[in-house]
Length: 351
Image (cartoon, rainbow, N blue to C red; front, side, top):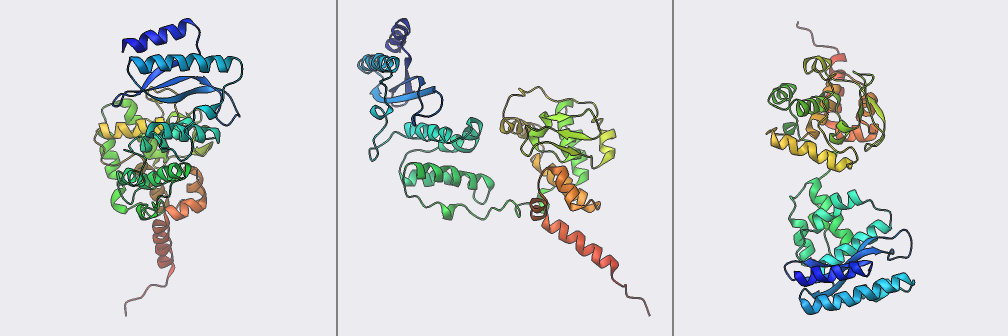
């Protein structure tokens, strides 16, 4: 839009702090964007939007330009107040505006931007409106009885609470439980693991697959390893549960797959753990591996139980507590214990 380009050029020429943007291409409405003080008056300035609700036409652009100059002048002399530009409580809100307000509130309370993107925005961005039914339908876009459904209920529920809306999502949460969701049919056998390793054509991603399978690593931990004491592997402190040491299970995979030859795929090390983890998931899908990376980690845990590793030792290798380990792998632990007890029982002798 030439009017918008010209207006922003004029604003830049007078060193205005704000620029005009089109925020909704479908409806063509305008906002202002620039470095602004926090809405709660605490913390640092950040790049934020002021929603105007003006039409994206020559008249709307002209009005937005005037408002940008006024707000910039108020900022210069310390007279700017968010109270003049926030949507009053009780009035209808634009969906995008409401999400952005929730976003800023989340950050102001100590939330992190990567978590916002992965746990909130990717779910809230699929909403069609701000009515209670819109929020319910947004949750229903996820598969029932899954971790993703639980996350959707949490994200949308938090959003509804922020909007002071009453929305009952409890019945949608389903029966997902992280400690009982692991089904034997989902865990690849050791033969399956070796089979699919051989089918990966890229040496770097073959190495990633082998390391996860052999050391029971989380996806993102692949990019935060210290192999200076290999075959002992040290996981870095920037990971989900911090520093720890891991030993291989099986050792023959270390030699067979030449895991000592570190071949980490090129990725930005400054990326969030979530971003790095998704990169691994994407490659498993790309190479047609019929199970997610995390199932290699589950297989590692179950393998160590079958080999008689102490539960606390396996838990420490995986980077979680004995309690979590026991709850997650309870059925396999119980099976092993039952077998051990049976082996110690007096055996019936033939007459």
